[in-house]
Length: 289
Image (cartoon, rainbow, N blue to C red; front, side, top):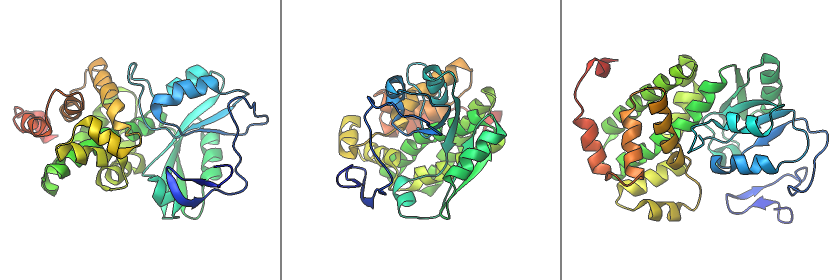
């Protein structure tokens, strides 16, 4: 990338500005104003453990939960950099569309209004507009959990179901996301904004979405290994589904939609069986909420 000024694997055709330089982890940066973590969630702990230097302000752009602990990426980074101010940048942000300059919005969430403003101003551009939020937990949970639902939406399309099915699936899944979020001190309105509904719609409907494409392949009858090999990239919803199941049990939140997706990814159910189990669930007052 240093030589060719292009990320040929992930963003071919888009030049990298000359002001961007590349360094190894052996290099210790000085006078760091802001550090952005944008690696797959499964690698965040390892990568941050290798980062040198002082990083006073860290913007986490990785969307996922740690599989074995259920911890958010901000929590993981906080363990590696305990003296840093850490928050999240998230939203309906498909990388190719951002690179094309297509109008896009995002949400920067930090516990400090002053830091939110700094991050917002740093990332704002004519085609990428950032709003500020103090709901770090809500923005991070929404950005992570929607990937699981995007896999399910892809499965629905791969099975040949219609928009009725996908609309019901996504709306019920959104309710489950919000219920878990409320148990974890998140704000309900966060799940109804760009970081929640906005990101969910973009990820669950776009062919550019890795999670959607993986789910569609599963619905068409391919194995998880086949689907992941064809994808050739990380689908964050796969490990996040396990973490979501862990958090649901820990906080005693009933999340049948998430459980169904996890059961398929875990090899316990076929996609059609998972749909049947959801449709056969006993009706309750919860169905009216």
